[in-house]
Image (cartoon, rainbow, N blue to C red; front, side, top):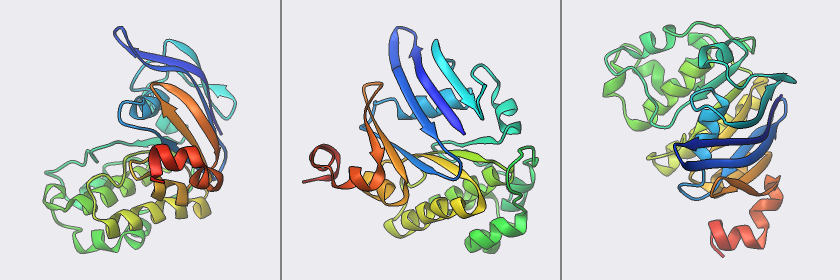
Length: 231
């Protein structure tokens, strides 16, 4: 579905991505792992059209999409749920969900189906999003993204700042999107948890892919355990 081929991106003279290549297939969960500053968020921003690339190609369903505006990518079924949630704080939960047009060509999600996925939002339906807890805001950000009918969702640190229980629930919900025909590209600070829900994973280090493979293999790889997961 998604192919990123040897892309390069920079902030001025600072190179954030240097020859990064990844793939996401239909219905997969693919994790992007690495230390802070490795380029994970920049990679998602480059794919979603927020950060321009200076070299390489990005294609969706075999068609080049680099250089397209984010709203045009959304129409192709690619949605970005950003770090920090970015909900509209003065609007209610209902308004945050209904403000999104179903512009993608992926599976249909309705307000009711989102509330079934996140029952907590049903209880907060008429409340301002700014009054929700961090976990509730993350649920709302995911639900709002799904309302656009995506085929592929980019998730940037969805468990950041959440309790272990809510983090586990959010990640399991992302994994369950496979059964609905939605693929996910997941940047996640909790590497151990990410490898449990992902099919495959890539490790970035200083803007380059240094390791990739099945998530189950990477979870037990000695170099991964020593560098990221604890011996």
